[in-house]
Image (cartoon, rainbow, N blue to C red; front, side, top):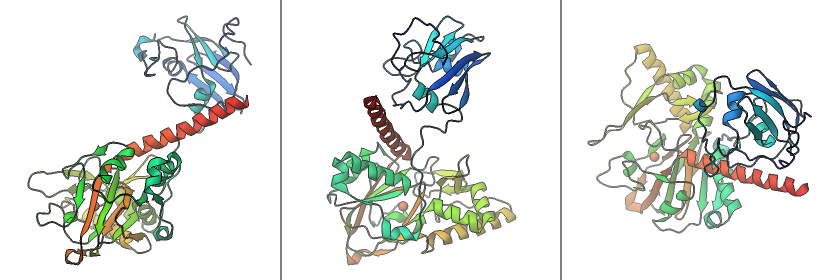
Amino acid sequence: VSDPVRGGDQAAATLAEAPDFDSYPVLHAIKDASPFPGGVRVLWDDGLECRYHVFWLRENAPDPQTMHPVTREQALQLLDLPDDLEAVAAGTDAAGNLVVGWSTGDESRYHPGWLYAHSHGAGGHFSLPPRKLWDAALQEDLPRFHGPTVLQDESAFTDWAEALHIHGLAILEDLPRTPDVIEYVPARLGPLRTSNFGRVFDVRSRPDADSNAYTDLALPLHCDLTTREYQPGLQFLHCLENESTGGDSFLADGFHIARHLSETAPELFAALTRIPVCFANKARETDHRWEAPMIRLDEDGECEEVRWSPWLRAPVVLSFEETALLYRALRAAFAAAEDPHHRIKVRLRPGELLGFDNRRILHGRSGFNTSSGARWLRGCSVEREELVSRLRIIERSKRGHDTATAGNAD
Ligand SMILES: [Fe+2]
């Protein structure tokens, strides 16, 4: 292990702060550190060798001139640093921090847990539980939770939030049958997103319907608000009444359907990831439309979003050949979604709250007959990123617990 940069400074036998509010267990120690032109080379005790760039290190230093001590946001600006900044010394102190001496005369200390977590080749730090794609077998194993417990108990809340991410859907049971539930339960994850249908919308048949949702029609599997640049993430439906004949809900995992298509009809899958479809609403006062392929993949080729609407599409303006390919792909996709092997049927009971990821899970319903009884659902949206933020905070607090436990062990 290298000597400390300033050998006399043994007062710094505590771990440096991290330049954020997360917790970082110290999983690995620094075996060696040395400056080189443009950076600092560090050898970790698991054999990982990393080169950290001078600007990367310098702007992430946790001292109060670089990082505001209250906000922990960066106070130093990148352009405040000289072009020719160099590390002139590097080593560790008694606490195991990386210590870097700069050509400007400054010195910075870095928490080894934070440094390792942000190291190229170390495997990342911020991963969420992997999604589990599902088909009709989920019917027997629906993620259901006791609503009042989820609202009171942190670990039950975590189970519910994780199910919303992992399976893309979850049901809360035994909630009150009052119209305000839709206001305060989803809000536990984040602020409600308003649309032209309101902050909260009532799904029931009405004579002045401005959407097929507000008729008694059957609805094929679809996503809501596909006509928006940014489709709402999580959708919640709270059942207040469901006495009518029909009116069952259907759900399918759009990411599973996409994977199924990629395996059974790769040419059609590729068309759905490539050819833009114009999703457009039809209304007298608004004209929302958005052009995008129906399936969007992330940089790793994993499904990130489906935009799925059997009935809110403007006519495509494409060559005859592209039109033919797109229609083959659309028909294959819609047929796969409605295939009983892929979808599940859920009859919501009064007091149940169904939540699902509207950019992944497709929802639909059978037609219903209002003369046989009332059907009333209340709905709202919360962005997916609010759930993801909440899950990261849950992971952070688990890491905090691990860090504290490790500290006690010492
Ligand atoms: Fe819908």
